[in-house]
Image 1 (cartoon, chains in turn red, cyan):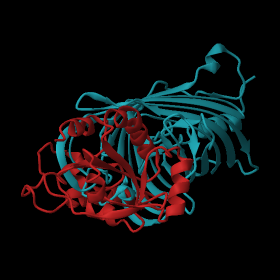
Image 2: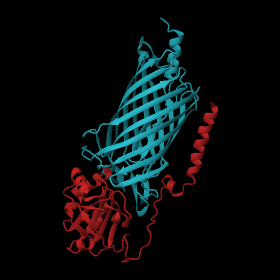
Image 3: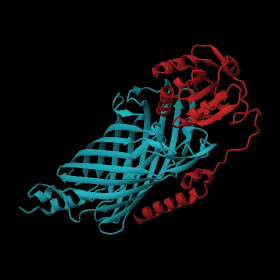
Image 4: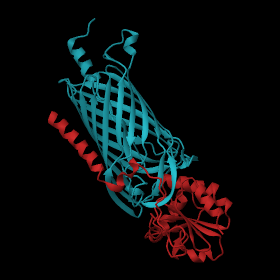
Length: 185
Length: 322
């Protein structure tokens, strides 16, 4: 029986040793507060903060084609994209944004970007089922814009009317988003 | 009337059966709260396979919402546990889960795996003698076995703050957490009741990366965590003195709002109620215990908040070294 015990102890030891060789996976053990954002050339084309966003277009859930540059040229102060997958965290973020941010910026276009459902019909169904019929939703069926911005669940992107990316990170508590929108030219 | 030797033996072996591995998963990572070693045993190993299937979620108002059509979200966790007696009243334990994520979410498919968050536990047993009785003859017979413990969750899993591509890749939460646990257990044969109360505090951490993308650094802390589980069970003795035990449980889990740079962050606040059933088979001298557990979260509004609705099926085996 003690051979079983020895085997398990060896397994735990191997796991522990394996951890030391997992590079970035173990970054949580000693988190860093160092700012490691890469330097960007201001005005260059790209999706990092300070870069000029490339244009793109997606259909919304009503079947209308919506383009970034066309949206900014309406004119609008800016465009906010919230990458949404109809999950609890997304709902928490989106409902917070609906109550605490959107009403304060009537000259900004806010979009939920559905990157998971894969079709206009399914996305519209999810939009209504989750109670977001009042927020325009774009359908990123093949994750084109999702990949363009290096997004994930909850990623929030702000593009000013000068087409410069002002924010590209997780929604969190909405404070960073509000500060970013207040600072739009 | 004195108890017969047989009854005494049964009391001894059943009282010293391993306690449950209290487990909970949350948005990508599974971690155990504690692993409790039976009295008068030197060590124990536990291997358990969790099969957790997702079935919609509760939104921030507590309303139940279904996942998009075509979704099939599952997480499998293989938990390796080892508990070791340090002295007559003190014991320590370690639990290491390995996690497989298998997700079909609307138009997305993802299969990933990796180590989950590990747990280190230290438990004090506030009793020396047998606390299981066949009959209540004195008020002392009503005194439960009491365990008081601390558990440290170590963020060895893959979290949103690691170098990962998307939210389907994560196997852990990325935060250290310290839990204070209290387990009260009383058996009056053939019935058993227990109460587990746990209070956990996450440690604040620096964040400079989200899903593989470096961001402006900030400090984040998850909210305090509370878990309460009440269970009630019945033990049936087989002719060969092996036992089968059937237990029903009710659990309430919640986490307060967290904070970001000291400001409240309500997005991580959550709540979950669940019911469960456990069937356990133990050999006569309780050195092997096989356990089948089913934990069900009720997919109705008002049974949770801001959290996925999941069912967890667990197949486990424990071996105790006397």
